[in-house]
Length: 148
Ligand SMILES: CC(C)(COP(=O)(O)OP(=O)(O)OC[C@H]1O[C@@H](n2cnc3c(N)ncnc32)[C@H](O)[C@@H]1OP(=O)(O)O)[C@@H](O)C(=O)NCCC(=O)NCCS
Image 1: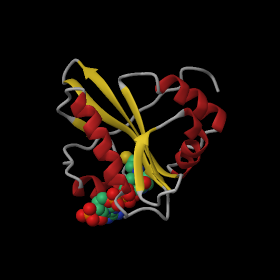
Image 2: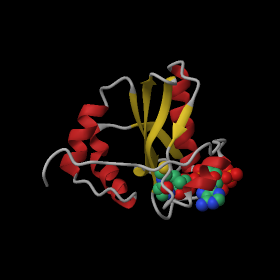
Image 3: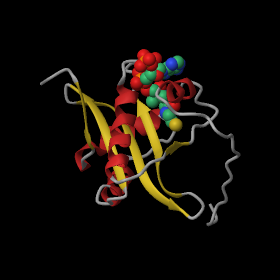
Image 4: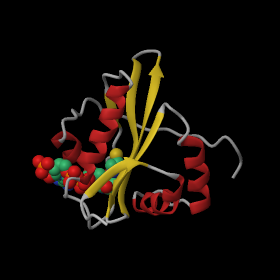
């Protein structure tokens, strides 16, 4: 098995490791829930989930989507990106984002966006280093639609 970094589309079999890495991102999720989510997302042509693998071990993943906004038109947004602790700074994040960019270009999209939480200071120089420009700062709001 090669020890070089391979970037490929995610498969249902990847659910356990994708869930584990989601936990390191701060979003713990069970394997069952991730299996259901991947089952819904992977068939969608407006979504792409990419994993990075070394020697058969998944060391990172990213999820990109095509969205149509009335005010902006069609664009690509990165919804999630994580590289395993201990594997960072080796070019994996860059390769994952490049894969999303390639997918988006292939769909005729000409803009790519990502929102990055202020509590992720490592991601800010990363995005700027790979060509993204910080253009605004937002507040994020949420509201429960069911009683807990
Ligand atoms: C952000 C993250 C995905 C970056 O992945 P990575 O594999 O470490 O990044 P890369 O090794 O591909 O780095 C690409 C470039 O960014 C630079 N970079 C990466 N992290 C950096 C940091 N913390 N500070 C300064 N530069 C950084 C690298 O030096 C590299 O530059 P170079 O190509 O000129 O050498 C990773 O740190 C991570 O998973 N963090 C936790 C989750 C997270 O923040 N996700 C983003 C959610 S929006």
